Length: 155
Image (cartoon, rainbow, N blue to C red; front, side, top):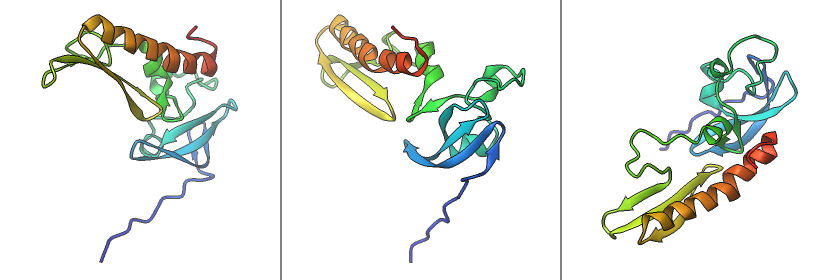
């Protein structure tokens, strides 16, 4: 006999400056909710970030005077806006370029990009420069376009 978990219903609840409007598409394997901030902007936030208090607004501060970092991250369609803006290379990255890695078993460079909760394989390349070029083109087409549409930046 299978165990089934009772699904949380957060519609109508308030978390900081956010009011839950209803369920949204999952972010990866995590349940997410469509919320409206006191400033009027809508964002999608994972359940755990709402319930533990990490995300309390869309990131606008809502006149609270709190630093933006303390208010959490802004997720739109499963994509974290702040992480795209930062364009940081992770500490465990060995190539120095996000999304480009050495594929030891094939002896080639592999390029990929994650966007809206999905990883997109961009191909394998014999030279590092080709893999970097493929990654940069994908960033322009996906990330930069998204940022430009979201907040008038990226181009």
